[in-house]
Image: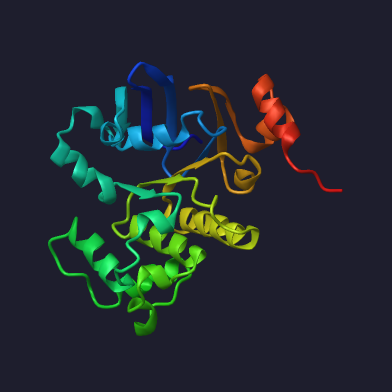
Length: 257
């Protein structure tokens, strides 16, 4: 049985005269984890920004269509998109060191993110519960830490907590494990899989590492030179790649001795 569609898009994006995405089309079903895999410079981060209509703030232009839960996002005002971001789309950036103000306490980051989209007060214990969902302690000592005092792994988990705070239906994760060591990377990947299984949150997982998405993605899209050249379940991508670029990616994966 096919799942209900959550997101569909067709996007062309450019910076000046340089076209980065060339009419890339895709869909994401409710509860699906789709991986967008490509080399550096292939347009992955441009896609993450364009889907949130943030590309103009980086000097780019995006054209086309983005339909989320039946709403055409391209037709929304800036104010309307600010409501969508955070409430309906959660975003996990690559580096906690760049995304988190090191001088701000964990408690304050949670409260400010909550107030950005909610008129009511955060219920007692809510922040602690969200931290627990991403395997972080919710005690006073941790809440009073400054973001700069966290390890990279803790910072990445905090970014995920901030992204899911409002219960979005879609989570966009842009290279969320690239700054992590192998052990922490595996733990964070399991965390994404757990969040998807427990809450049904759809995830667009963007990565340059085909191996990192093998165990969690329901579908893998291969992005090359601004277009999706191949798409399919991991078994198909890993076992029977068709496009020369996909075959090269699979052949470059590390093998067990």
